[in-house]
Length: 114
Length: 110
Image (tube, rainbow over all chains, first blue to last red; front, side, top):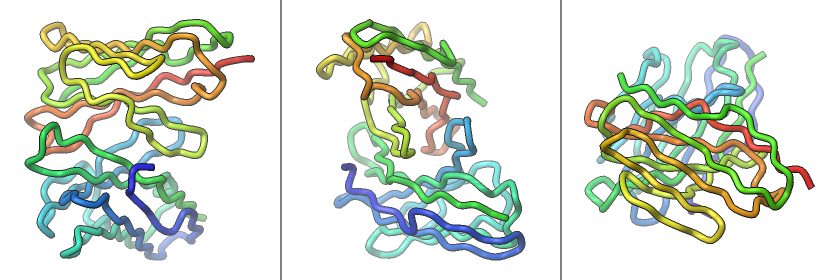
């Protein structure tokens, strides 16, 4: 158990729809990172939030957006869903400024876009 | 950007056997983590090891930062060790995010 939770666990959407995924960080952590993992691949970095602001972004289009709240929880929003967005979405929490900044992952949300 | 290569891509072991997984990276790193992803997708932290050697039960890891590689050793493997093992690194240019290798898929047979 990492203390990082994600909801929902599974989700089915149709192409063109919008989706919101949620992540609660581990107690004491102030940073949340989001990753997309396609089948058979390693996770790919989407973006990171620290102090409620985006603190780095991977090679993902603007229709992927996010928020971080004062309690450090976070949302990932994806607009205009495409079939290729089907993947496991993982969030990780860490403590920026802490020793090592180890990232701890939640159980993920499996998104299927039909 | 940095390249992270893991080998072998697939590994099949008999229960009780030992194994070594390798992670090569193409640039200096300030963070290296090993993860085990179970069949349900959960990424489980094994080691935070940007340099040196650590041991945790039947698992141990060594990172030689100057030579840009890390090794994960699994001794006396059990069927519950099955899954995908990922190496992930962070470097100065990655803005805090982890760059993952493609993983080593381990299957331990009873």
